[in-house]
Image 1: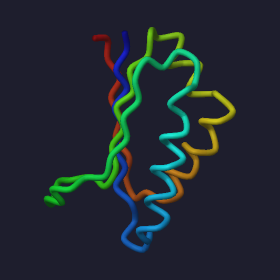
Image 2: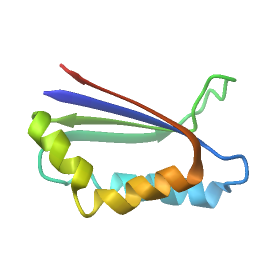
Image 3: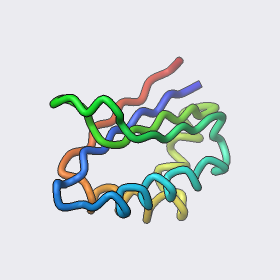
Image 4: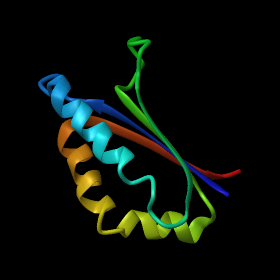
Length: 95
């Protein structure tokens, strides 16, 4: 199993409606083939080191992660995340 973690720090000018729309679009990816579990959430601690939105995705294997990266439903949502964010961090590991 592969764990895929991503956190988005939105630009300060991005309004809450756009942030929520991004989270909704992320949640809609939960049924992409190879995904075992998909969680999306907004940070509620809001510490100086916090990011605004996080996702945790469990994939059955590396091939499923690779397929997700280029999936036609994922690509525009990933681009939206890049457009809204000042910083994005990610880590992928075997579990």
